[in-house]
Image 1 (cartoon, rainbow, N blue to C red):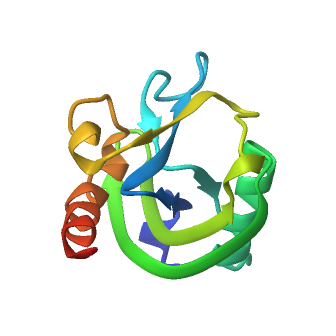
Image 2: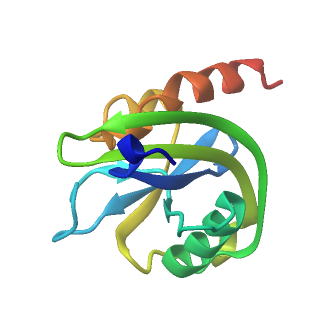
Length: 139
């Protein structure tokens, strides 16, 4: 990381699909971006492997069991003004029955079209076209 990148926070996000819909979590009141939906995940600790960080975050935030971090979906840097985030998104499989919000207001399943109509965290918006294309290719 260069000195210019010190203010960039590295985060990871999970793209968890079930029948053409994707898991989103609603940020709780009192947190930054409260009321925004986001792909679940969190911060990568210094020296931590991003895939391991994502598995850890899913266990901590959603009580996820059987987490398998698969292929990368995309990477993007987003500037919120007061903070910059570098987001790495990965496809993830896990035991869907184990999921419950521990740090979010609630979780929900959304199609890419539905994501365009909700208040989505701006850093996550770049994923919608990728998910739309992936859904169109699926048989």
